[in-house]
Image 1: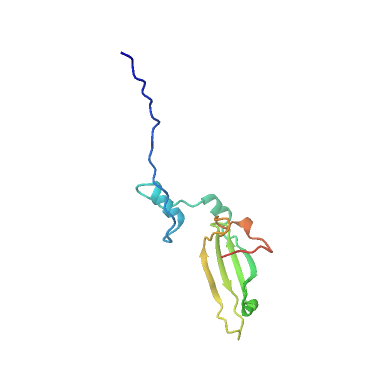
Image 2: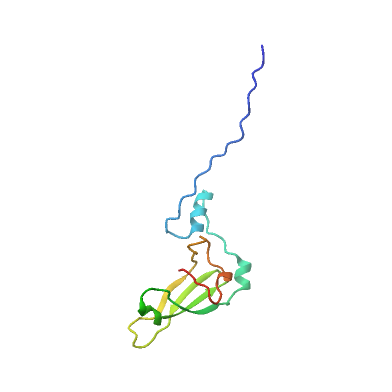
Amino acid sequence: MQPVPIRKSTNFLPSNPIPPYNGYGTEEDTMGNVMKLDPSAPKPDMFKMFDNDRHVLRFEAKLVSSNPEDDLRKFIVSFFPGDDTIKVFERVDRNSGIVGGKFLERGRYKNPYTEKYYQDVDCYIGNTLIL
């Protein structure tokens, strides 16, 4: 009687597919729900936060639009390198008919072309940010 050779299969480890971002919370929260059974809040980069505490990059900006009334609008874009967040504030011009103030709330925003979050190297004079 001849022995029958049996091939050992490699260890198969099933994995869950990563679901698309649904808009609730952040993308890090979605990844935490997939990777762990008991998810915890994502940990911030404390070294980066302490090194760049109270540092703000501020730029004057204008709106790129086909509407001619938007050429007069002026904005202040603030980038906070401690946590890579961006805030946009519209300057108030008297009797312009446009209400100034907070234009975009402080948060982390992605570049739609690269699908990566904006960083401090993306904020320089002459660059166009798509928010």
